[in-house]
Every structure is written in C-alpha cells, then in structure tokens.
Length: 203
Image (cartoon, rainbow, N blue to C red; front, side, top):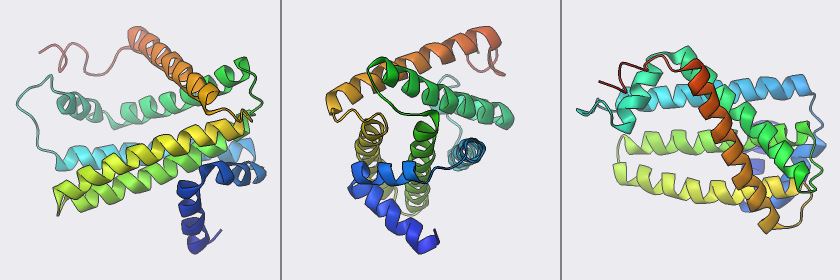
C-alpha cells in the first residue's frame, strides 16, 4: 500500500472496523514481520510518551501520576521493555481468553489487528499532542474522541478475528484478557521491580 492507500484504509478501519479486520487477516503476513511490527509499535509508543513527558512541566508532587511516568521514562530502555511486555501479554491474553470462549483466531490474526490498531492510535495521539501545543482544548477533545473510537475499533477487531459474531462475548473476553495482563504485569513488577522503586515512589 502507498501513503494514500494507507490513509484510505485507516479511515475505513475507523468507520467500519468489522469490515477492515478480514482484510488485515487476509494479508497473511509472516510471523516474524508481525513481531517486527509489534516491536516498532512499542518503540513508537515509547517515543510518543517521551515527547509528552518532555513537553510536560515537572509536578511538585513526586507521587503524582505524571511524576511516576517521568521517573520511569528516565530509563527509556526500561520503558520500552515494559511497553513491549504489555503488548505481548495483551496478544497472548486475547488469544487464550478468546479460544477459551470458542474463538478461532490465530496468533497472526491477533497480531496483525494489534499492530494496525496501535498504529492508528499512535497517529491520533500524535496529532492531538501537536494540536495541544497551540490549542490545548483541541487536544483534550481529540483524546476523548480517540478513546471512544479506539474502543469501538478494538471491540470489533477482536470480535472479527475470533469469529464470535457476538459483541457481548467479545467484551467478556477483552475484560478477562485485560485482567490477565494486569495480573501478569503485577507479577513481573513484584519479581523484577522498577528502576525507581525505593526512590521516586517512596520519597
């Protein structure tokens, strides 16, 4: 696809994600290419958060959420690793929970829609942040719109890849998958810790 085709398909994915998902699956991309896409999305997400942290003034409260994010981004490789871990946990949780409820998605199906979904979300966030440099209220409105559109897209993507034809079942799968990701990430933090434990969080 060239740039115009990508833009057209991105708009189609936003308007009708249920129709876009089968097109993505039919691309039949090799697994190594999809893993490269997952790595790229994690890198872009890290860069985007890094930019947001860079333009955000440091808060006076060291335990404020943005202060924690700023401290975490002080170790960019760690931040990238955490982002990648969450992405991987999400992929396998959606695959496992979906199959538990009768879904038929393959690993490649989940990966291709995740890469495309995250690419669109990153584009939304980047535009919102750039608008926010000039008109802050537009950033807030666009982030709000992107959140609603993102939920709509994600639910329909997962519904299609698992061939559920049931939004209710898809929502259950997504909620259980997110809980599994939270549990897995919490276990990781307990076992490995973070580069700022004992410093920023407990000052």
